[in-house]
Image (cartoon, rainbow, N blue to C red; front, side, top):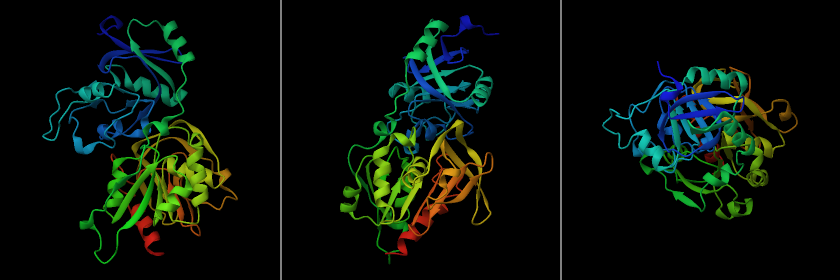
Length: 371
């Protein structure tokens, strides 16, 4: 039976609870917001998802790292996840595609990890008490010292500016997948922390993607003269990205607009709705969502802390199109006359089910009808 004397690493939560484990990845102390993810596979995509900036992710699946890390599976080549917390880490992966271990990648990007603790108890704590600050530290740090650090350390609010591109980047369409009789569409994608599989999903449907920084103005986008505008996923509180909200507000009605996750919240705020923080968020690959137009239930991939307030949508011109069947939160909105719609979940998956990939086709069809 292991005791605290056998461990070399621990986490301290704001409620004074401590969990003991072993270090992997980077060894520096770090304060993050602790969250959990219920996905059974896809840890590489989770580690490299920019939406986890400043967050320590607890994986509910007990074994992580068994198929290693492959270059082609990154959602960003420079992961910014705050920390990774797992029950068991496998440092000898069995996969012909594997190029590095999770430990090696975390060390390379200065991301701390801890394993060997009771993740079942920890996840119940997050479920019951909500997401909150956590300190990943050495075993020598006392509880009193840890609580003082947590009290004096704020989670930064610059997450989107940290992970967004700094200049315009273009991605050409994958011409082998488009109807040769139709020209490629030019889509401006506002990068708030965009996953790479979103780019792949658009280019595979005959789109040239022009990725622009999060604070690009409406005037700059109008000068590009795109066929449509996409607003990406990303980390943090949507009310922190006032510049992006103002840009979308100015573009509504001028171009077809599609938003995912943070982009969904930004679009809703641009129309005058409100958002609020969920107790412990939605993170995993098994969230059931009802499409109100078809009645069909989609199993979705999700990763977000905030949701759109249902009551605040009244009078905005937006109608609810999708609803989460676990807690009835808003999962999609639309304004048909403005050719604008968004969803809270991830139709590009990576990781997760592909039930909702049709939404990219819906966006393309909306654009083609006016071009």
